[in-house]
Image (cartoon, rainbow, N blue to C red; front, side, top):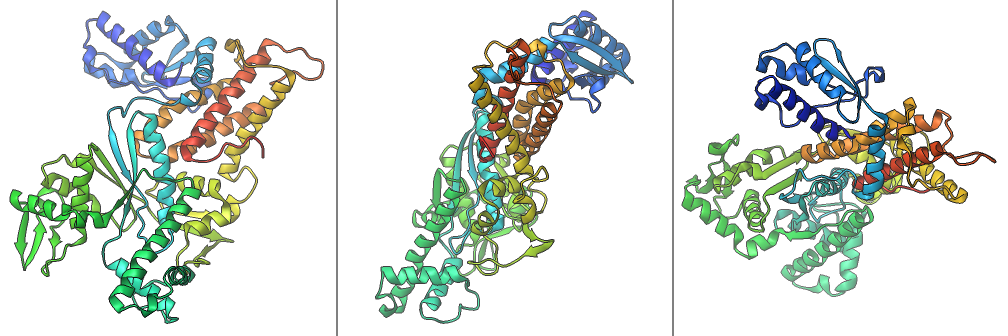
Length: 551
């Protein structure tokens, strides 16, 4: 019985208890909360439902808790229900009901943890979207890891997710990039507002190899060659680096297409006709303060050129025209203003602002020997995805970037994340999986399988703790999806690895030793190990981190 199963049983029991006494059943929450108590001696699970509901139905919490305890104690799968304090209920599961969690995992395999809380949601998940003017820096790398994990997690809950990269190939930054390439090709210093680093010289050289005559062309043609070929080369590197990092996109959307297709002009005209654009000082402004933004935004500048938000507005309309009912934008720490402006733009079109969600990620720093690492080998002043992977590898990079809430800045200690000890979180989790894989190989050598286990035999303290931890997985995945917080998966995996290591360290034999014949307890413990390995593998897969067979 998983926590979700217990919550359903508890609600049904509470509804029956209230109805039998003529009390109002409608006051019950749709889903009741059951939690694992901090002290295992108090029971397997605890709930405060009596304290939530008692006043609403005109009774006191302990009296309601007494009625619930009596009804629950008679329910199938419940060993006992005891009252604590002012009305808490501490619940112990029967051994066979607890073992049912293991059976469920064995039956569902890789599907265990899935649900339907987001069924019917068609989600556009836009992340990374780094300008094609340089390698992906650490902030973008964080979004690559977190965004990819979030996409996987949302999918487990029934959402149809499209991963999208907004390819910024329109605007002044592309001009600065091409000017920087031209300067490098000529052996000149980078322009004052341009881009520097060895990668610029590399790309300039590649452009010249493709077009040996490029420096002999008229200035306008020369700039166009360096712009188009240079951007293609830079973006090819970005896509390759992301792929090697385990991140691929369903759609690469070109910003320039919004201008070439007339989508920007159409969006502006729609807002003008609705009265949500006003003219002042020769510019056209979005009246976004009417929709909760902190200030009105310039959409068309006084010189007639489009401000950056013009593309954003047209891009949102394009997403909605493709049928997405939720658009998630994952943006950097300097983009807080986008929350208000994007929601205001949605409202200005007569759309629901809640179709827009903006997640803001904070900064990432690399630390070596307690000192921040500030210089990249290839990009000059910024640390890149390539630098991080070279330093600690793909698995450690992804795990380190995902395991903390995006609301907080993080320091990645290079010594910690390359260590092979329990203090390294990804090693700790992967080692648990590798240890379980070793047990499976040994069981195979002995001809022992986990089929038809008597799971009611798993009554030891460490066995129960491990089973209950396994049972939390579906709830953790659901919460991670609904709250958009992939770090919950990583923290859970560390908790599960700890529960498994404690179970393993308790000294109880999982497999028979020497001339000992296999017994039902061996089959039951092997089944528990198979289930633990499955859940670790499922969780690591959601993070895009490998589950090694040996280490």
